[in-house]
Image (cartoon, rainbow over all chains, first blue to last red; front, top):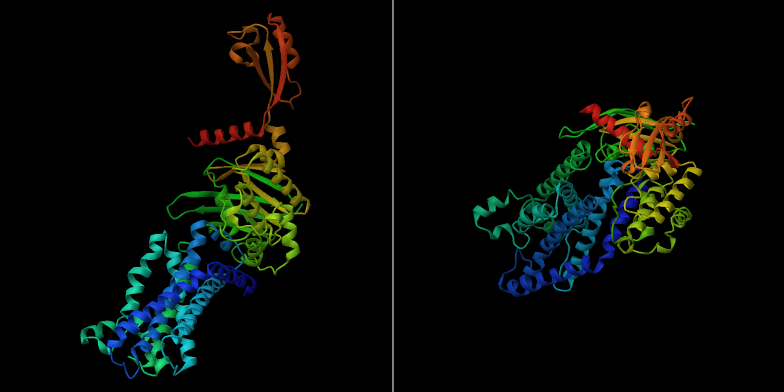
Amino acid sequence: MNWTAIWAIYTFEMARFFRTIKQSLISPVISTSLYFVVFGAAIGSRIDKVEGVQYGAFIVPGLIMLAVMTQSISNASYGIYFPKFIGTIYEVLSAPISFLEIVIGYVGAAATKSLLIGIIILITSFFFVKIEIAHPFAMVAFLVLTCISFALLGFIIGIWAENWEQLQLVPLLVITPLIFLGGSFYSISMLPSVWQIISMFNPVFYLISGFRWAFFGFADVPIAISLLAIGTFTLLCLATVWWIFKSGWRIRQ
Amino acid sequence: MSTILSIKNLRKQYEDGFEALKTISLDINEGEIIALLGPNGAGKTTLISTVCGITKPTAGTVTVAGFDIIKEYRSARSLIGLVPQEIALEPFGRVISTVQFSRGLFGKSRNDAVIEDILRRLSLWDKRNSQIRELSGGMKRRVLIAKALAHEPRILFLDEPTAGVDVELRKDMWAVVRKLRADGVTTILTTHYIEEAEAIADRIGIISEGEILLVEEKNNLMARMGQKQLEVQLTARLSDIPISLANYELGIADEGWTLIYRYDLKADRTGITKLLTDVSAAGLQLRDVVTRQSSLEDIFVSLVRKDVEKVT
């Protein structure tokens, strides 16, 4: 394993994140604060406790997941698409590194960035609501796994995209609706029965449910199913990335 | 001199069916500068991209210092530095960090002394903390070279390195390439500037339509294929060549003021003495006599034209 090369890609990508530190960190903090003001204070005051948890606290796992998933996809897709767009990908392709090492470098950096944002949002939420995390280690594990798996998905989107429009297409039209409809701001039990069944087909629902379990000790579905869902999703992404690099699809002609 | 890069029956066909390289074979010696000349679309960049691992070969083998570029890609690629044709640089990165990145990407641990030496050689040291977007086009090209040299490669590919670069900078780059050769670096450059190949290359390869038409020592090539031309300038304008001079296959230039005689310098007899005697006997008065050597450009144009004629 060429760790020096992996570290070079990782630090180069992280340097880009730190170059735009204000935009990278302040933006999610502001938007999270707005969510707390709108959903927590304005709407939340009219909603009863959910499973014994104040609504403001109940939406914290969903808010973190919303930010982490979108940021992971955005960071990873941009990270690999930008070198393709400006042509610097030639250097990565001609370097003595394997595809696995390329993925670890880019996906690792993207996952780290979104993990940092997730942690900042969690810290921000402490200023608005009182939270006690029931299973802190499981929470961290879920968070890390979500960052990695969605960064892998973002990496795939970045490879697939042939222009900026395509780069935005999947996150905007597929991922964001799935996250919003995956129980970020509500419990599935609050939905009519038809929508409860439809939600079962949304993979993001299982991730948010699992993450919420780590916070409060209860969830819409058993934690084992959530783990199976995120494990399957990660494996699917890994398999796709492996195929992309093996075939050279949209990278190496 | 030992072979450092060996290309055997290399073929590249893209998915759309276009055959960019048609069974190319080429051996490149360690420490030499070889210039690949060819018109647009000849396959020069595809050849470089395939050797460097950017595109996949359809058939054939390539070895770098004995390492196969597919099976032993790590060893092979670590010996190669590539300067691409297009200026491809992260605009917001700083010069020194982008060069350090290249070194790390090729698996080499950080070495500030090496990076400083490269940047100084390319007159980039004073700009080391500048953002790439602040640099001129010529400076950006230097950064590309610095990046390619950051991991101390033994082979350097320069894909049209001086395209769009002013004359002074071009000559600076030639000096850099010569210095690299002195350090033992093998350089393969593609260029549109025949003058560039003529100035710095040891060997010339001519590519057209995905095939190598020839590879030869530059001096041998020019001596073998270079014709000399004798221009006989007259005091009176000539409309037709006199019958007594018909055997010389003379040409007329300058609207009849000059006779052109082409001859082979390596032939036992050039025929110049007899021609001048016959010209005088034909009653023509000489004003001046000039000789001119065919340039590499003439040879290149002639070879490519012959190749096109052969195909059509």
